[in-house]
Structure formats: structure tokens, C-alpha cells
Image (cartoon, rainbow, N blue to C red):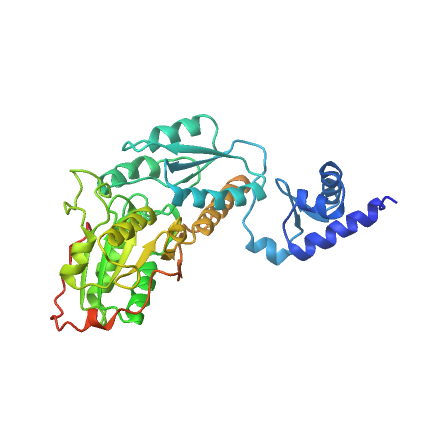
Length: 387
């Protein structure tokens, strides 16, 4: 016997009110009706003001308090939001997935643009997207060097549509200081890594990091700051994680890629922080080929946590909240677009930072006592970062 329409719609309301935003396809499966039927029910309930429709989702009606706190959603008609990220960047692709979810829930179309590696590649892409009707911009520029970063400040500051910069923090006092940004607090990520290693008893720590992105530069600066002042760090060093990890011959930092096994032996180091994941996995392989066991001889922490868990030895990793950064950036842009539609002031500019976490796996442990009992004097051996 077919369930009465009124009863089915009461069940839909009960599910949405208890769970929050719910996919229409999931509701259809749960209530054993077609997606077409379920969508018709949702449309009617939305027309009656009993719930809200999104792109493929049903959401509960908000109270007045919740409405005041929630992002203002612009109407679904009109141009898409342009989302611009670098090519071959798995970290930022995860961030895009988080942004996509927020835009879809708001019924907002997005147009994804992939920027090639050439310096300045983002500007013509953005200009073309705006000419084609994009009404907002979510962007994560590559910014391999400080020079390429600052070259983008002027044109980004002149944009006539709302924009949010994602996983990038423009220089203080620059033309982009007053642009909305959402990024990870990388200082805190390095803090988590160093505290974990020193808590296990490691006193000599190496950072092998990239030097070709704002994230890499923030990590190097944070490690130098933390390690140089940490009471439990005796010796530390910073070096490139791979030959391709710098910006090229014009890079501010002219240091060469390291032979990690040799550097660990030279410093008597028993731990390493490795940025990013792919370089970390390759460095761990090089250690193994040189007879250095992870974690028995050297504890290793990766930074990024995109593929760190997939190594033959799953790597402990600092895990930035990639999807959450994307979602927060999208919600901020939606609020800006909603304010623009309603004639609102837009409120203050926001420079948001989200904290990463540390995912402890099998690549860290307390050091062998013999490694820390050599009697070698504690002499810091820093390699200056690019800051």
C-alpha cells in the first residue's frame, strides 16, 4: 500500500529537522520513493516555508537567531563563482572539495580554473573568468617566490567582485592586507611536530622543507623560530627537501638539496620534519636505502598529510584542515555576495586561521638512548630560511 503524501512529507520534515542538511537522493532511498517524487515533495515543503531547498539538498528552516549567524546566501541565478588553483596540487584540490560542498549547498555554481606553473598565470585566467560573468572569486595563487607573490598584489586589489584568498596570507601592509583570507596556522603545525618529538626525547631535529610556496616559507620560518628558542632542542638545521623544491636560480635561498642520511649523521640528529608528503616518502626511502631505519634510528613527521599515511611505514603527519579551509573560504565569499545583493556593508575584512592537527602513526618513537648519549656539545647548526 502506497504511503499517503502528507505522511511522507511529515517524515521528510522530521528527518531534515533532526539531521540538518540532507541529500535528496539519500532521503529518496530511505523513504523508498523515486528521486523525482522526493524532489517534488521538497519543492512543495519549501514553497510552504517548512524547509529550505539547496542544490540537491533539503535544509531545515532557520530560527531568527540562526539566520543572523548564518552566511547570507545569494540567489542561485546569475554567474558562477570562479575558483582558481594551481595545477598538480593535491593539497589544494582537497581544499577545493570543501569549498565545492558549501557552494552546492547554497545552490551556487562554480567554474574551476587550473593555473599552469608559469609566473603570473592567474591574472589572465581571472580576467577571462570575470569577462565571462563570474560574480566572485576564490583563489589560491601559486606564488612560488616572494617576487611572484608581490607582482600579483596590485591587480588582485583592483578586482571589482568579492574575492577570498585561500591558504595564502598576503604580506602585512601590502595592497592585499585588507582582502579576506582563510588559511592554516602553519606555525601551530610546526609547534605540534616539535612538541611531539621533544616529548618523545628527541633533542636534535632537522627540517627538510620545500621553498617554493607561501606554505613552505611559513613552515621554514616557524621551525626556525620554534627550534631556536626551544629549551629541549639542542641542535637543529633547515635544508631543502629535494632538488626541485626551490624556485630556481633566482630563488632568495640558494641552499642546495640535502643528503638527509649524511646530515643526520653529521648532527647526531634522531628526528626530522619533512615537507611535503611526496618528498617525505622519498626521503624516508632514501634513509632506508642508506641503512637508517624509520622510526628506530630516526623519527619522521611529514607535513601536509595528503598521502603520508600510504607509505610502507605510515608517516606521522601534521594535517592542515584542508577541506575546512575551503569550506570556510566559500562561506565567507557567500556572505560577501549576499551582502552585495542586499546592499549591505559587507562587514569587516576577515583574516582567518584554522589550526591543523597531528596524526600520530608509525614513524615516530622515543630515540635509542645511545643516539642522545654521545657527549657531543649542543651547538645549533641553523640553515637560514628564505625569510
